[in-house]
Image (cartoon, rainbow, N blue to C red; front, top):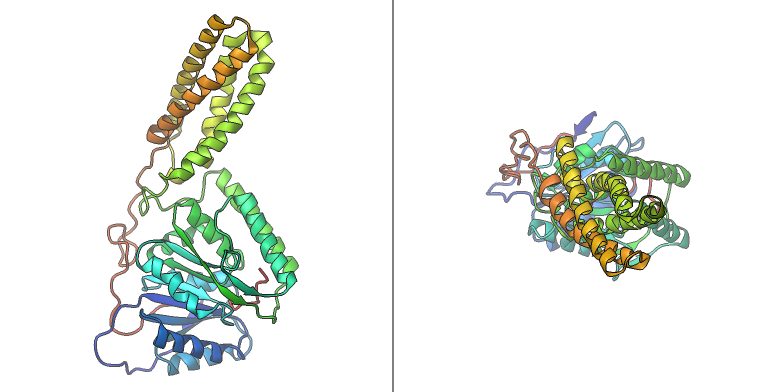
Length: 434
């Protein structure tokens, strides 16, 4: 990836400088008219109303007009403004280039048209700087948001986020609002997992962050839509659907986790119990259907054992890929031993329940069904404890290579030297309608 950075004046103000707390990236593509007033307005706001030291980085994505020349001029004129130039387009590519090498404590981005009210910036980054959250997003769909945009854009946005929530089961409300921030040491862990370099980059980053147990903070924003849209809606929709399908396939193969060494306890939260319960309900329904199908042919006790063999194997595989995915990778031998232990436990408990039911009400299907439900309920509690504490227990990941910005023993970046950070190299690279 070819990246060029605009030079800064040699002279720097004298005196001590506080470390950069926030680096705000503004990706641009052919924005020669909008760039100058927007960057001046943003820099003025940061200088007068923002309590932390912040740097603005203009990331030019292969603009064919005078955008790069104007970005370089702004970087030379304004303290706290940098400019980098990339030879290829793509919002995700621009964010990856700057975020991956940032020395700031928190990295963020916003669209060059400043559609989001700047008063939302402090509520966006404050929870990250305090350690309360790991990633923060502006949301146009959260309660309290005030949005001015056309019906077409509104329908596209809500439809897209509904598809994402339905297919990927995420909890955040707005995947594509151009106003996000994340703790620097965490984004450097996530970026290698993110494959997209264009519009789907945001969605993929958020889904992977949530899957890895990061705490996502939502800020309702005031949003005034820019009518100057040049996005190819059909192509964007196709690419997004392709990205969603790719993520689903990746998760089915147990991929998409990386942060266990940074947030080892984050996946041990109520979400696991909820996912376990969902899988358990489906497994119980399948078990009952198969038990009723084989009961008359094999008898209650044999049918129970045969069906449990089938469902326990499938149940354990689903838990590995869905319920406890954030704890991987898992040893196959441990999974087999665990599945066998869970099977023996389940067969034992349900057999006892069926024997008691047969003694109380011989031949009663209702009694046997009740006994099975009680037995499987108790077995489910035992299964959850076994799977969580043994089979799918969290295993510490190897410590990353020692560096000043991503060492596991010192995850926060070291204080920056005097002056602005020296980094190598949406609105809208073409405006996103969502």
